Amino acid sequence: MLEAIPKSIFSWNFFLKDDGNVLAEIDLSLWREKGTLLIQGTSYHFFREGWMSGLYILKSREGSVIACADKPSAFLRRFEIQYQSQHYTLRAISPLHRGFDLCDSANRTLGSITPQGIFTRRADVDLPDALPLSVKAFTVSLVIILWRRQARNNSSSSSGSH
Image (cartoon, rainbow, N blue to C red; front, side, top):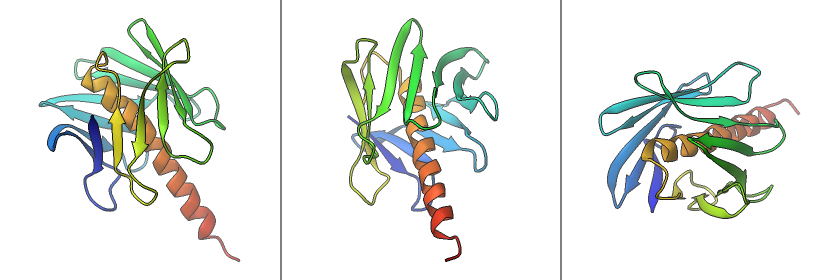
């Protein structure tokens, strides 16, 4: 099982580790919902297609599309992921839980990304072996983006004047 670990206490950049060994790095842009994956010296880029779009795309260094994820609703914590001919759904375990399940097109749970505790961003990543590490890291990135969004929304609502 993989583990997603923040690079530092305040960072939204993560290491993906397996048994303590770094397999991938996830670096998010500070201002936009895009970032870079570094896997064994190879860079991949992911980005949100447009400001109002819910489509996220993972591209290789050469520019070919590896996978894409559509967030069909701004109100639901869910992505529809397309990798090759496979369709997956990444969805929140429950409205109050930060964990996510990855399901196949028949709605069977194939894996999960689950925080290790209430007050930590460390997470256990249990995704199917059939997915390449780049797609696993992309899937983890989508969860991190939603966590960061939620944290920013919580901090902006709590910093308002009373």
